[in-house]
Image (cartoon, rainbow, N blue to C red; front, top):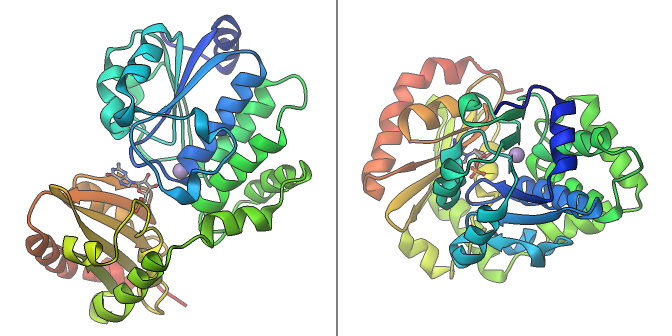
Length: 342
Ligand code: 5GP
Ligand code: MN
């Protein structure tokens, strides 16, 4: 059953009691922020709503209002399955394809109830969803959820809790308003969030100024010992082995943001962070301007993302993955050097 337009979707929401909200695997600030905001909105209009995320997420985003209601599927499969068994409608936030939901994908494939995607990644998997609200222009899924809630509701509906969650989504997906934020709309929505009385400075500190000593020392080590700069390819990368991570008592989220430092070097157009994980090497890409790391992640590392921020996995050894990245650089040299970084 396709949902043909937004009025049909609103009618379906009206007639549904049990709704599920889901996010992509390894949820980030936008996934958690936008899905919790939608969770609060549905709760507020009397729905029985379950927010299910595939796996654990970092401490710096686990303080948001309503966090205690989030079901982490890999930790509580029973509750997740029970919610799916009764659901009438499923929302899929901040991801563009079923496989991006990791451990939730089997349940999503099996469910017969309509799936609604709200997302801002390129190339949505159109055929797998009954309704799609997808645009690559928008800063974040949180910005889309703001528009969705204000359109859906007949009365003022963005509470302080919802605004807190949405602010975290927009702030984290724009790197504190430093990329993907050239549209006035992003700032207009943000201004509306601030009008609810949220403390933007406090929220920023809660997300960005809560490093453990280990995390800060891992950052220092990455920059002083592990940064490789290849000016001839406008590329810089950092690789962290299992041993490196163990030395700094790695916790989920501790490598977040490291890749951006490599990109902050003048003249660098592509930055990569490689981390050795259980059974795979995780790659995190960032770029400036028209150079698409989404293409590189998709073509060579089983991944994808946005033009300027993407991720992927390699199942080769740590050393071979670094070698593969090095070998790719000459291929992309021309397009990398074409980007003016001034
Ligand atoms: P990060 O480097 O912060 O993990 O991810 C950057 C961006 O790339 C995020 O917006 C995320 O949605 C996307 N991304 C990360 N990993 C993957 C992946 O394995 N596959 C796809 N399709 N997108 C990814
Ligand atoms: Mn996002």
